[in-house]
Length: 225
Image (cartoon, rainbow, N blue to C red; front, side, top):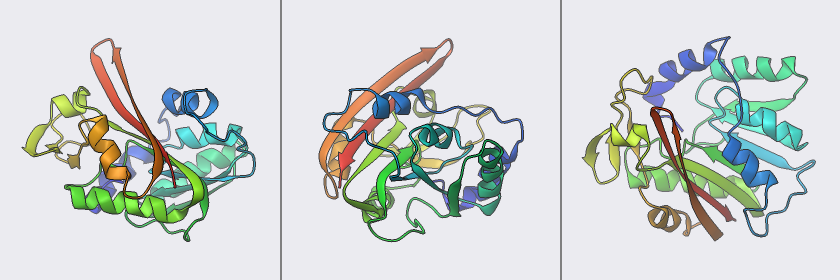
């Protein structure tokens, strides 16, 4: 998730009461469609963890699957604001302060873990490896992870300052992440190689969208513990 030095930035961003909230359409298609071979769509009553849930957009969607909702974010303030949004819609969720590398739940607790554009929040490969290892720790045997990360043709990556191999300093004008340092996988092949130490049945994909003047490029991965 976001590095600790960014807590104030992200807390301020997600505290906004009028922040628009919607789920990732790609996540919706991934979990409800027929794109992932062997996925168990009997979601009701199962535990799902949303790492870096932000404004709660994906939690609103996951609630429609009748799953038991859990989430981790950097600050108590983000947890409180998003909890308030969910509660106003009659949705219960256990939201806790934590990070990619420190998930405050026991081993083998979750059936599904969603990591949507947060796994890359770290300066180097060792950090990313710790993130993936922590994901594997909290997922039960046979459980699934679904991950999205920034692709090479995304505006965030294209405008970033390259500090080292796969190490990017965000330089997108007007973006609240300006100056942050992230480690992007770059290719599906490399992304697979990072996860195969901890997961099996790995499948990757890529989605590229041009929304008028905005290029969005996502590397996607799903795997089984």
